[in-house]
Amino acid sequence: MDSELLREQGHIMVDFIADYYRDLQDSPQDFPVLSQVQPGYLRDMLPNSAPDQPESLNELLDDVTKKIMPGITHWQSPSYFAYYASSTSVAGFLGEMLNAGLSVVGFTWQTSPAATELEIIVLDWLAKLLQLPDHFLSTGHGGGVIQGTGCEAVLVVVLAARDRILKQVGKTVLPQLVVYASDQTHSSFRKACLIGGIHEENIRLLKTDSSTNYGLLPESLEEAISHDIAKGFMPFFICATVGTTSSAAVDPLVPLGKIAKKYGIWMHVDAAYAGNACICPEYRKFIDGVENADSFNMNAHKWLFANQTCSPLWVKDRYALIDALKTNPEYLEYKVKVSERDVVVNYKDWQISLSRRFRSLKLWMVLRLYGSENLRNFIREHVNLAKQFEDYVTQDPHFEVVTTRYFSLVCFRLVPVDGDEDKCNQRNRELLAAINSTGKIFISHTALSGQFILRFAVGAPLTEEKHVTEAWEIIQKHASKFTRNGNC
Ligand code: PLP
Image (cartoon, rainbow, N blue to C red; front, side, top):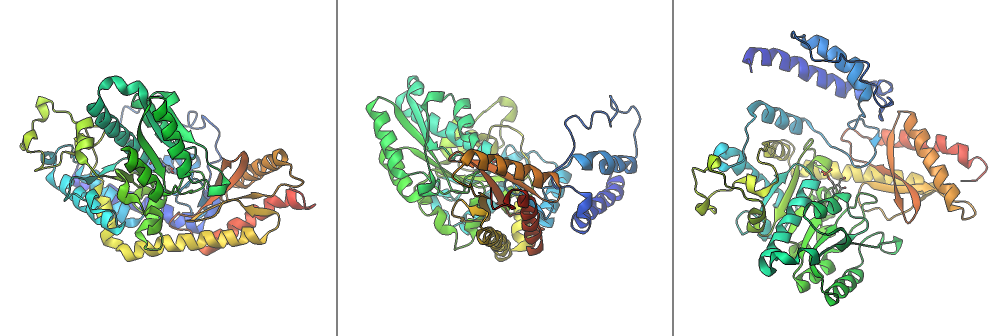
């Protein structure tokens, strides 16, 4: 890193990025929200091999504009309403910049004491904002760690819970281990279980439906557990979700936690998206019952302006995690001995990989440069915008809102006519394709009870009321093809 070159080119790059954010707002026609390129588009635009001689940054940025940008789906566009948002902020960006600049690899405490210690402190701060129980704080037996993604978070806790039970009852019971979640649980749960050696037929994804707004029914869980125990299986893990990926459904943590406690089962709470909202007192009720959970995670890169990637995970018993994931090769011999493991945290033992980024920097910067009151207001504003969209849908007889909205996601569809669900699904599918091919907005879909559902998720930091109104106008315009005769 030549410091003067960095200064010169860093300024150029910051200008380039700042211009991008300006243009996304001022010239949206130049940035189709959903990239409209065809697969393989880039192959013909770039040479077959890397250059022998250096090129200039200006040449490269020119290529970014002409060749890379067409293949970008603009998650930061104010008219991005698909999946869940990937929220950025100036503070998060600056944190990433500092992280890239320092480029430390804090796998053990001594490889950068500040990286470890800041992570502990910032996750204690965030835990307090979420009013998580004290046992998740670093001062007790628990603690927080920033995983890269929600998928990594669920994987490490499945491994910790698995090893905890295998240690208690012996390794031979692995084929009898059973896990539970709702059929709305993120696909990473199944993947984590399979990686953890849980037999596929022992992954119970319990059925949900509209009667509970797609939340898991505690009775189905208890029934499944009793049934499994009677057959000689060993229930050891339940993954509850607060804010499912499809429809932001909420599993009731209080009764689920009681059941988990009764049967000695590890309960993990996946609050990847909705957990962020729980820094607002009015949404905290959705994680009531987390007191009985063994672990909890949320994705600050989804809705806490922490830029990709940042998935804080808290565990009640950090030693369960460490026992499952620790490695102690000679070449990593610590200045602080393993036997003194209470003295320092070595985060390599809380995650899958060894190397790790200094992610807490950006979270620290987001929390400090905005303050929690501002963060709460951002989230409230997004929820209000979703409510505005929901009102539009409700007022149009050709559409219906299909689930109760808790946060900033609205699930809706064109209504069926004469009960013809197949035709209705097809129409909604066509409507989605038509809307997204405009490049003006991007929304996504899901399936609930066999119905093709459109999802409108607010969370892009630049979104304002006018973008929601425009989005609704675009949806209505394209829907008119189907609604002209009053038909879906
Ligand atoms: N859990 C839930 C509820 C999610 O919605 C998602 C992603 O949308 C994940 C887990 C996976 O998170 P990540 O993409 O960070 O692995």
